[in-house]
Image (tube, rainbow, N blue to C red; front, side, top):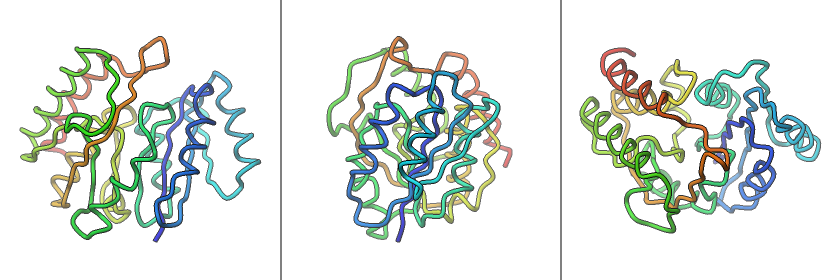
Length: 231
């Protein structure tokens, strides 16, 4: 069995090497495939990627010539991935790869097809950051749950693990952060068995490179309503 770790990257020159080192070191009890997708970074990230590509020819690398968004980068990464299981890993340091074994456990024990991490179920350390982001995440998750009739606590979380056959069964259309809403709606509609696992969260500020904005929140609301009815 093999785990593909898909890492969408945009302007993360300061954190990328540290992050992939942590990913590379974590023991998941199976083969790992690291898939990096640069979404047309402009801060030197692509130079870091090229250095990593020379050092690790066994990893997979993809490069977008035009910035398209996280959803588009994930779409490229999913097509490139060859693992039996696929996990999403952001290129910043907000999430700790040491938590992979806990995230994989419900699938490996035969309980789940999809596992989401949750920043709201307790677990490890949580950096104190933005109240309105917290409230917005809770609201979007609640609205998504109302449309999908599932009871997630953290729909917008980065850490999502899928059996590859789940990803192969859906078509991802959203290019930006609407991906989180779209994949949740399509997994729920597909009747796949979903679990949540508590995770730590080492959030960062906008000064440290956080990218999601209030505009993405409004897009998420539109996507929640849209994917209630559209495949």
